[in-house]
Image (tube, rainbow over all chains, first blue to last red; front, side, top):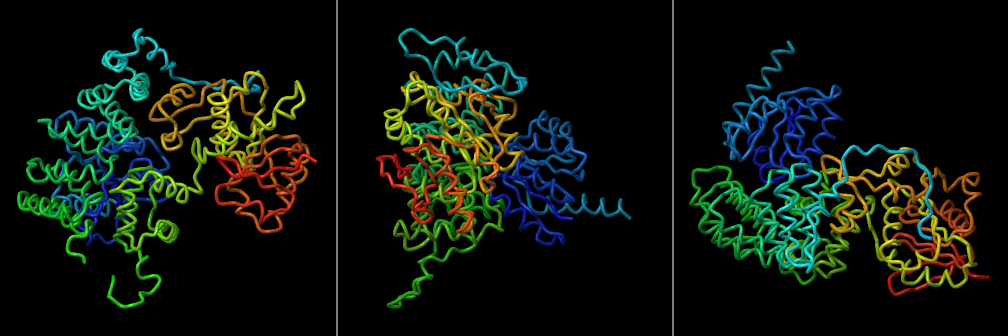
Length: 126
Length: 192
Length: 289
């Protein structure tokens, strides 16, 4: 299953895409939470990578909305933010994120976590 | 006289009328200082809908100091108020949008990023010099990244030296390097 | 790329690369909240090429400079219009509303019998932005509202759209053309960036289900002073278009006006109407006799 990258910066989305070029199922992109939710409703994603600060439905609102829906596949969420205060990470956990990373994220870091979180799913499904 | 009314089923509106907040702020009798009094009301307000109403009223006021008030909200407000203030500010005439540049002087990196959000609505020719200045010295990686993105969109080859200087300053950072290479391409550096 | 040849191929300068498309998409999204995914590439490229030709831009970069560096507001608006022809939002093509208050209504009231209410039909009304915009514009800009009753009927074939319109709840994108003052005056903010049209305004529009192609639906729609039928007929084939034009003709009172979408022309659809070139807009009129 594909990964959905949600960030309002096209540069960031392209950077993640290039970091995850080896991911077999491929990457979809959404520029905000609203469009991401619409996409999540039409296909299953194996992982969500979500920026916190977006206008037009920010990351936390999106993740809460995602977690509240029973008709959407509940896959892991990596939340990424420029903020690194403890309360921001707490808000992310409470919203339903699995991991919280600070921007800018190094390619290697992203690859590591994506690999861990998607292979875990593959193991669960066996 | 006026528009003919038809009967609809009563529709439940759950939020309280935010307009009360605006009238409670009170318009001073001589019409000046409206933005300041609305700002004071905003500071005392908890309800997000009322906050938005007050921010909208500030933007709608003909007060010459309205951008000062918006700037305070961008600096002090929570995410919801900040985003709404930026949106409202972006809708003002170009010369008022450009006043957002004073936030670029802030010591806080977050405020500088927000300044760049406001400036997105200004013409490239007015913003490019500011971005060139910023990129020549900016030390915070996230502010730099935001500035690089804005230059990529609205800048020209004139920005190349500043972009290259930033690339050197952040030599270890692969995202910044990626973004700057992207920006150089998009501003036509190296093209004929 | 310019290879210096005496005659460059017609498409060479108007080529829009993948990078250009992505740059444009990002810019357009930041400005309007509308995001074109890769499947919309053809749609976007075609329209950018049109605008490039109309602005005399030799290449994409020149056109984009006009938009972003020079920030040509008129071109930005023209671009938004062609890109959003399938979108609806408040005060879309508002020059027609200005024409309504400045030119059409003043003419109409001259021949309006005393006590007769004026009638405006918005068809299709889609999710309701158009009829509510008409109402707002009348309240804000037509002094005649103090002396005349105006009935606004809004119709669509899609009942879900009608329900949406009756509820009158909209997101930021739909209201972004409204000044903060108008937003304040006519809308209530609900949670999470949603706005609801205030109740008195909602009650001022009557929403009905109508299929313009079905004579059983349209038979009772008569005696309208102004019909707004924007960006619907372009989707009809020639026969249906001619027949729809007839239906609208019959729905109008003699002297009544019809407003089409900015790229539509009645002349190609029907000879029943007279062209009226007002300062704000070109509209079509059912002759008085």
